[in-house]
Amino acid sequence: MSRIVGEMGSHYRPSARLAGRWLGLLLVLLCASVSLPALAVDKAKVAEAMAGKAGKAFETGDYARAADLYLNAWRTDANSAFLYGAARSQHLAGRTEQAKDSYQQFLTAANADPERQKRAREYLAEIERSKAVALAADAEKAQRDDPKLAASLYLDAYKLAPTRDDLLFHAAVAEQQAGDLASAQTRFEAYLANAPPGAAERSQAQARLDSIRRKLNPAVVAQPQPEFKPEPKPEPKPDLKAEPKPEPKVEWTPAPQPDSVQPPLGVQTPATEPARWPGWALVGTGGALAVVGLVVYMGAVSDNKVLKNDLAELNAGGLINGVTHEEAVSMASSINTRMGVAAGLAGAGLVAAGVGSWLLVRTPVRAAVVLPQPGGAMLVWRF
Image 1 (cartoon, rainbow, N blue to C red):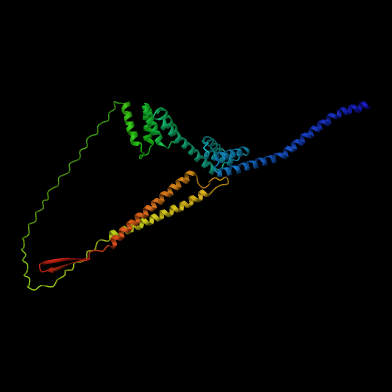
Image 2 (image 1 turned 135 degrees about the horizontal axis):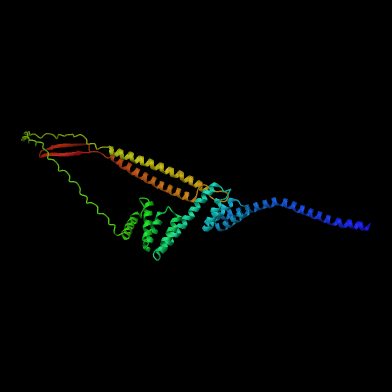
């Protein structure tokens, strides 16, 4: 009997241990399933807290700290708004390369705001332009000692800012100074093909290009232009009309004067009234200029109010939503220009109206009187 019980006990213990292990595993899985949602909620709260601190640092101008906090918040919770905040903070902190990477990563985010993506592209273009300006400054410093290096730097800057044709012109000048005439010829031809007609460097570029062409191909001689001779003007034909015959002279004999002295006799002449249309024309023109100046000024004042409202519109992160930096600068420049034009129009209108009024109110000559005298006559003007 004891042997049977012992055998039963030896078979029972492993089954009890296996059941205990399964029970423990189930308890672990249950705890994990309960704690996972809580863990996710905690991560979101932590990211929001870090983003809040980043926004305060951004408002105080501590862009480096704001960039680090926004970046940590985005790494904790992949919210594209945090990544945009990190990119903008890096940009303002002077970390242009990091900002460039963050902007590009934000543009590929699935849940990115389209309006912020548009601004991110504008900021990327601004970074490229600033890099082009820095490269152009380095090229200008190196052009005296190493024109070949300067040409390379100018071309790199032109690749970043292809709308700046002046960079292509300076690259061609540096290549010409370095002795690479073939490349300089190509750059000058490209510059003349792309630059607007009123560009400041066009005449100099054409002169340098002509000089290079003469050096590369001296056999080509410019054909002389034919001398221009003006056509002779026809001589005036003589007037064949018959000359008028002179009229016979009639001698005038004064009538005898009576002995008695006649009383003064006044001869009234009609009043000479000056033309008044120039005065009215100046007054009308001055009034029109003043009205146009007032309209321009009111439009500028209205746009200035709109710009102030756009600059005052901030989001939760302290960023300006209403307008970009470049748009604000362009609008402010346009408003100032229009106010200046309005002031000029108003001033010109007042001057024109004043001159016209003076012409209208000046007193004309009214009459002239001839007074006979014993020894002759006296002329008297009346105003």
